[in-house]
Image (cartoon, rainbow, N blue to C red; front, side, top):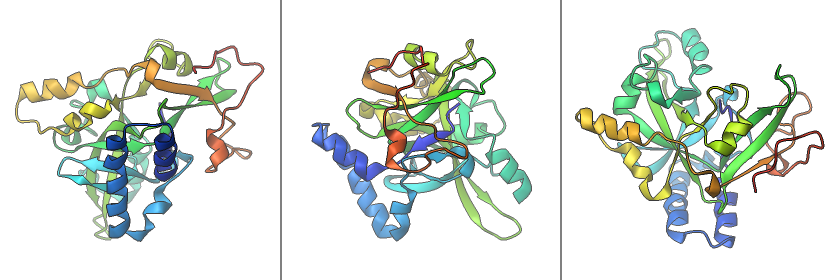
Length: 268
């Protein structure tokens, strides 16, 4: 699924404002960024043009118990019941994403799905198109809102305590759903089950944080897990991100790249 993301919030706010995006939505994140920077001066170090989930960098998160604050959690959820650091590291590589249809059943996610849902704030994310059946040739695509507003993804978080050192680590997973028609063409490695991140609409993003008291509340949360309309997204190929010659965390990672051999059309 999605193992690569962008969190260059300040640049995004600037670009969205130039395009006349909703000022209320821009202020929502801008004020949280300002507060976060007052609380911890290293906030700017958590902004990336590109980061791989397997590097377990910190992502901006808004939780139900502290919705006014932007916090930063390590990408790759570690359930509270994991006993040792070695197991925690191994499991965090398997929990970068959480399949939305099963979050209330899977042991790694069910406690967080009930009690620790959050919004993961991204500028956009990357998905890799398989240009051949073996996956040896992959072409990365970048996905963002057309108006360049921040994206709020459904997330799950956990607090894990390293029993050897006493260190408390907050970690997060991003929920996925069935892909819309456009992203189904990009996420083509499993034609029978194409996926995308579960993007919350701006006007109803905080609904994901609602408390679960009964089965009806649970069903309401489940109803929020659904494909996001493709007409509000910009989807385009970018340069190679991974490997020895990968672009890495630089502005060029988000620049459109033409691939002459690519039959998949651009989604402008």
